[in-house]
Amino acid sequence: MSDWKSKQQLVDLLCQLVEYPSITGSEAEIALAEHIHQRFMEKPYFKEHPNHVKLHPLPDGRELVTALVKQDNTQDTVILLSHFDVVGVDDFGSKKPLAFYPRGLTEEYERMQDELPEAIQQDIKNGEWLFGRGIMDMKAGLALHMSMLERTMEGEFKGNVLLLTVPDEEVNSLGMLQALPALQEIQKQENLNYKACLNGEPMFSQYPGDPRQYVYSGSIGKLLPGFLCYGKETHVGEPFAGLNANLMVSYLAQELELNEAFIETVGEETTPPPISLMQRDLKDEYSVQTPQAAVAMYNVLYLKQSTKDIHNKLLEAAHRASSQTSEHFNSKARAFLKEKPGIHIPERPVRVFTYEELYDEAVQRFGEEEVERRRNLLISQRDKGDREFSTLLVQELASLCKDLAPMIVLFYSPPFYPSVSSKEDKYIKDTLQHVKDYTEDKFKIKLEEVEFFPGLSDLSFIGPPTSETKLNTLLENMPLHGNGFELSNERLSMLRMPILNVGPRGKDPHQWSERLELSYSFEQLPEIISETIHTLLKS
Image (cartoon, rainbow, N blue to C red):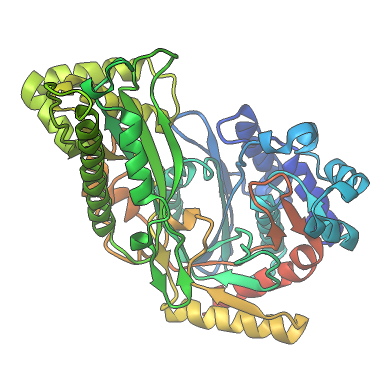
């Protein structure tokens, strides 16, 4: 008997999944993994084959889930990929208590719809939209994959289907990185041939009101570079006796924010320019001492550039910012001296370092044992998130070499997403063309292929890379590498296969108005995904 097939059954399953407040890093993230595992264990197939559904632990105690339905006469296997963690709910404001209760939240928005933006009012009146945190991104995709696994148990597909759902996609993708050796082990144990990985991330609109429906043959790449600006502190009454870190970070912002040099176009797809995700000084309390240090981190997306090319562009931007900072300081000092004859103000050149260069400088001065001792002490007392702790590790090195200040130090923080694509893979091209033809013939819906899924996805760690992804430069300048975050060339190349993404329709991911359209997502899309799996297994 099918439990997850009809539209109503899928809505019920989705609401059950959403009601777990599985914010990344929360206890509910663990609880939901165990709930999914239990739901599968209720199925007769898994009662007969209990070793085919597993909880795999992450080093931090969280868990990912794999569930394999295997036929007797084939090795060919399609992986269905999803994540079950979600972002936080502070953006819901007074409606925060309802964020994980889709039916209740939708009813509340219906009641107050006159107070909501026009686009949301229209969807409420349509009656086919359901609101809630994670309902679009991406528990609808997980529900659909659970439905596909149930169909596999019922013999719908001539091949094997392996469901993989992971935690932590919204932060560092530690779940997917841990899944790679787990998938490799399952492949070996069960003698599987992984044909492709099918993700269920929701389609993203390309502009407000975009009515088109998309499928994806790849996923965009991302770097998170950080810049520590380490100045020379002084009293506000003697502003030219030091150099304010906030001045340095302001020139970095002018150089990097929306910088067109980083925009990349491939075909009809264009990356957005860099934008800051963090910019602040590191002074803990108010005083009339100028801030000694400030930090900025930037979201940098890419398609086919190499990470080395991006690294060089970032360094060039830092050098321009350093020159502009020095020029600003010196020109203001000259203007001040016109009113103070006889006073000499030394110029303030701003040096630029990579994290690796600053680390080597600290080792040369104090010895590797002392530098590591200080770093290990910070690690043992860690109470900060990855971005903040990365900054602290860089700041510690800068404090050891403070006579080199003022300086700008380029480093990287997790997460890192390689850009991947199967657009030119004939197997994926033929599959997508068939699925597009099938969808238009059966449902009169036109699917449009986009090469790069724009919302970042765990496909980055399993798909074919679009450019050289040697990580040496990145890892050498990532303070957390080996200190709580593990990434390597070997891990990234552990498992590669063709990829594609066919997912539900929704709007406003990561916003209080996040919502899922039900008629396409739970009426037509299950048949479209089924046809995709059929095609992948018979090709």
